[in-house]
Amino acid sequence: MNAAEFCNMLERQGLDFASGVPCSILKDIISYLSSQDRVPYVSATREDEAMGIAAGAYLAGKSPVVLLQNSGLGNTINPLTSLAIPYKIPVLLVVSWRGYQGNDAPEHLVMGRVTVRLLEYIGIDTFAVEPENPEQAVSAAMKNMRDKGLPSAVILRKGIVK
Image 1: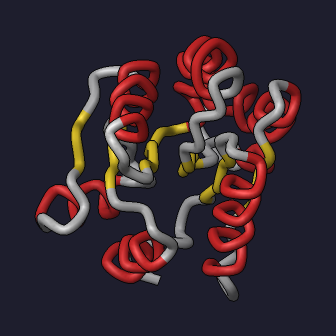
Image 2: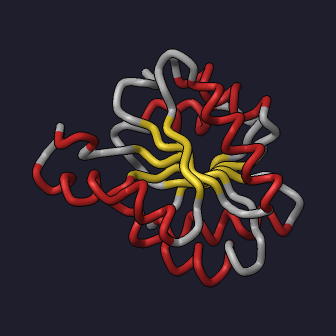
């Protein structure tokens, strides 16, 4: 699946606003979002800033997605646990999965092991994108997010979106 197809899939699911931080795995998605004008993309300097931007967009009537690398997931814990979860702000997190199964640079291995458990520990349901059916995970995450009124996370390994 290419970046345009992935972004169009997000748009079909009703997402109409995006924020995020640079990431080598998500770079093509971010480039695509930055080059079109149907879904505004606001670049952030940190993951917690992207969460704040997305929360503001939701309060303004948008359905936001936040794009981040799992190495910055720790920066989202406070805005998730003190803003998005208690105030029921549904944001789709698209989290790249560096360090998945130990296949990465050493600095990504710890977060690679704990990404899913960390999200689930704070109450964020996770949905891993599989290459043979990427839309299934995104659809399930969106349904979960809408049903619960809480953030959901789509976990994206390297190579699924090219």
